[in-house]
Length: 435
Image 1 (cartoon, rainbow, N blue to C red):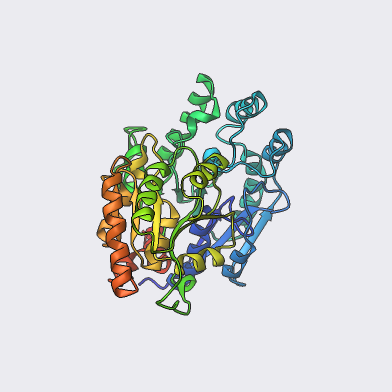
Image 2 (image 1 turned 90 degrees about the horizontal axis):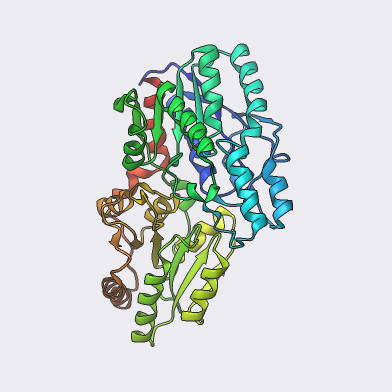
């Protein structure tokens, strides 16, 4: 390995104490990249100015004392939206925590979609740019990295590339104009054209592009014939093995727990699974089966689930990441739901990889030809079902419960998930930075 240390300047909006899945990708890269002789410097928003949907101070423990983190001011219209709409929180991606469709909410979304392009966190850019210019002119930076969403962050890389000509890696964790909730932003035709122009400029002018799935790579390649397919590399999300070091739970338990972690809104195919689970609960009345939801769950969905299986469900709002991992390690079966939206084949949520790390079977409801289904099959870690396959879900649940009754455990210990460890993925990222 080349022993020369590479210095990278990373721009990321989400950074501890921000919580959620998005913050973890580059938090973990920054944790492990120094092992591969890559030294990051982070530019992020000051949490006093930021508009985070959730916070999780436990992530602060992953930040090395040697890591330089520069925090800047920001102008945050989402904080004003929060006050205008009367919401207790800033909206989540996909608006999972918003069920109110009043005129006030529709007007607010229209303003967000048309006056803040590509997104309402663009007010951070001028401050981040100023900090970035100071660092570049004072230090020997080798590579600029921008990670999104928010995709406005990519415009920082675009401007710095134009000014300094440094190698620029654009890391896009989600699609841009193809994201499944894009239609909810109430864009005008002009706003859509402006947004698509920003997207195309970033994809054409970045030296390298990193995405989390093959399908997202395919989506971006359709945006311009000028994009070289070889400059787009897939580096998926993953799990940190250090997060999953724990004392093994006892084999005999009073309850069999099915866990779902993450966002759950109207676009997610939860109803077919609940239908299947209700049938299994009725057939296996002697067993105590409980499904546990942790994350941002739409109130309408909560009421639906409580109506169908009132005695077999419970709900946690956002919990610290450490507690989320503990919940997984105390569970027997994991539920993964892929939103029933256009282009859902490429959706790879962070929780999939933490499910793999916890080494219990995954029941995925989503496209069988999707990227998530492929990884589950590759790691021999469960099965994927289309939303209409309730009978097949019932049969698989009954099989798993039978195995639990016979063996007291259904752990999967085939080591195939190791390729998705954050340390291994950081090695791949380091190779890309050096290439």
